[in-house]
Image (cartoon, rainbow, N blue to C red; front, side, top):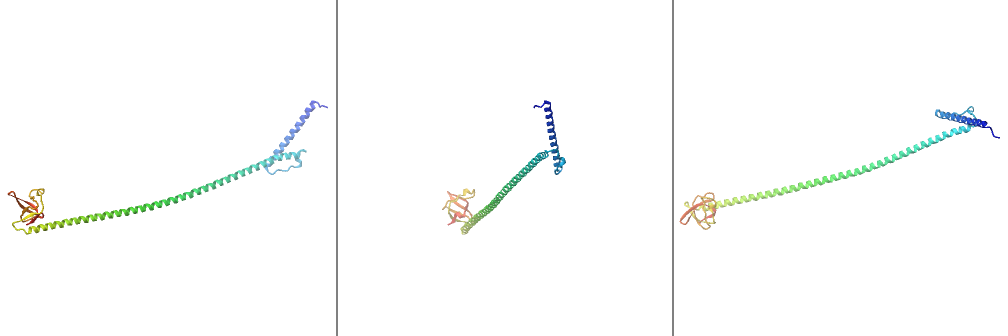
Length: 246
């Protein structure tokens, strides 16, 4: 039998009110539980707090969001720990890699420095050897030059001494030739040609084999000679080494 519209509408209002009341009660209990979680351990509900036969299902429904939140928090914390662990391991790996790279660089630098020092020492040794060789060569050259100069000086002195001996011998010979002449002079013969014009005025020119009268009183190897040519007497200085008494 169909119900009148007014009765149906009233029943619907009653059902809706009951549902709204139940939702308000559940929301109030959820806020109380959250407040209890913030303040301390959850308080157990006493039998007096029960408001109806759906108390167990309502408590279970209110506890599940807390468990989900706790699980989510735990998952978040675990993820954070895993991320931190991964970050720490990555940092350790990078630090290890950096230490190894630094060690290789230091080792390479040490090897390069050792080679540089060895190269510098070898170059220094070569420079010292080259300098010593150059100095020795210079000493040998100076010694050879000194020996050559000494030899040249000795040769020059010997030549000077020989010339001096020859001059003295010629002077002695000229003196011997003139010492035997009479005080009024003596005739002799020319041993070689003599061109007096090359010496200037006062010198007599004579040919080899020509008879020349030599006056006494020679001067330093020179004598005053006289010869008759074409009826005319010519006189002048002659080297006594070119003349021989006859």
